[in-house]
Each structure stands twice: as structure tokens, then as C-alpha cells.
Image (cartoon, rainbow, N blue to C red):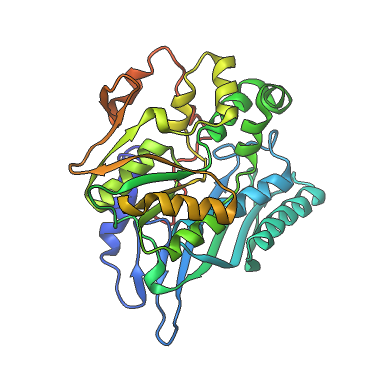
Length: 353
Ligand SMILES: [Mg+2]
């Protein structure tokens, strides 16, 4: 992977080799999920897949199998939510090392099934195999969306407002704690952060409501950190963005973790991954209504954090009004510990981006 130039270069390479999508594939590589429009159907299919590998994406010592199953479902459901889709069917392929107990496998499947059912999806098939030593879980999630309601990454326009659901930074703060202190120690410091790392909640209802609203022009889920993910959306829409750092809603878990580790809590919120909140780009004049509508229907807070602008750079503005390019962001946090994406940081959650 390094020889190719990293994960995004690999995805670009695959995309070039595969060529433009056509036929029933309405939207191929490059968004949270693919959109398929088989002939004779009123709805489009939304399809995404995600791979979880032991010691790359999770450690068995931290993860109760039940929560691991839930997370495997949740990260996929989140990509369906990001398109404004409704989850329908889930496929599970799993490679099981011989040192797993039957109870572990039962709990894992139970977690996966519970999470799927909670969000309206059914496990409908998959594949099982033996693996040499590491557990590998691959989930493919199918959903549906009415063609005009699918939210892509490409719709942002200058002047649009940038909204996020919930609070950011807890999941990566939780990861930093788990790597440093193990499960018991981490839970004592910031249980919220640990919970959000191990058991994220996909924003399915929120995404569906956003899908219904014409004023919402683009959407994606936050899997790799706010500034990086916003950069991807901006690049797909050929825009830039300005984020007001003061406005970014930082989770309590990230704050507690930062206090313990001497880090800047904002670094978790801006650069940390795995929040699985939604980034919603909306026409400025409708921003307030969209926020109220989602909050009223789901109870999930929505925050306006900035504006889509011309250019190709994601900027953030600090409390003093100083502007920084997101890619130069690390310097600004010098002295603080950057949000860990460490060995278990999830590089990318998307279909094939
Ligand atoms: Mg995504």
C-alpha cells in the first residue's frame, strides 16, 4: 500500500482502472455508498461495504464480542444514513480464527443482529471461513432511497452552511485512552469516550430526515475526522470551506481525555475519526429550519460550524479570528497530543472511495 502512495492513491488507481460508472450503477466509487437503479424499480438501491480486521481496526482485548458485532453493523449503517437511505438488508462475511470460542461468535452475531434490527435491517446472507489467527469481519449493507432524495458529496455550493449532528471527538479520544490504559483504565477516565469508540450510533433517522429536505445539498458521515472528511466533500463538490473552531461541538469524553493526557480537546474533534456523525451541507437560508427539524424529530443536536466557500482549501478560524489551512493544522496544536489514529485508527469506512 505504501508503494502505491497510501490508501487514497490506491482507491484512485482502482477508480481509474474501473472507469466511469454506467448502466444500472448511477453512482460508483467515490461517495459514502454506491447508488444502483435497476430498471423497473421506483427506488434506488444504496450499497456499501466495510472491512474490520483484528489488530488493525480493533483489539480483541478491548472489544466485547457483542459490541464488536454492533460496531460492524453500525459503521455500515452510517454510510447508508449518509446517503439519506433506509437500511434494508445486511450481509456478513466472517473469517474465524480457531482460537475463538463459540460464545464469542454467538455474542458477535447477536450484537450485529440487534444493531441491524434496531435500524430496520435484516441479516440476509454472507459467507464464513476459517482464518489463521486474526478475526476478519466484512459487512455489506443494502438500503433504499428515492432517487431524488439521495444525498451525494457533490452538491455543496458557495454560501451553504456546514452542519454536524451530535458531538465530535469522543471516539478517537476513547481510542487514545484504550491504547494507553486498556479497557478498565480507560473506562475510569472517560466512559463516554470508550463507549463511543466501541459502540458508535449510526445517525439513520437523522440522515433520513435530511434526505427528505430539498435544502440539504450534500451529506457524508464522519469516519476519518471532521477536517479530512470535510476536505473530501469539498473536493467532490469543488469548493472550499471555513470552519469556526469555536463552534465545533466537542464531546465530554474528548474533554475529559484531553485533560488527562494534556491534549487539546479540539484536536480529537477536528482530526479524530470514527465519530459517525453526519456532515450536512445546507442552503444558508434554510439552515435554521433544517437544524430545528432534525432536532425536533430525533432529539439529536445539530450545530452550524461554518460555511462553504470558493477555492479548494478547508480553513478553520480560531477564537482570535486567525485563519489556518486544515492541512497545516498540526502546528496549531503543537504541544497537544494529536488525536490518535494509531494502529487501530480506521483509515476509511467507505465503499471504495
Ligand atoms: Mg462514509
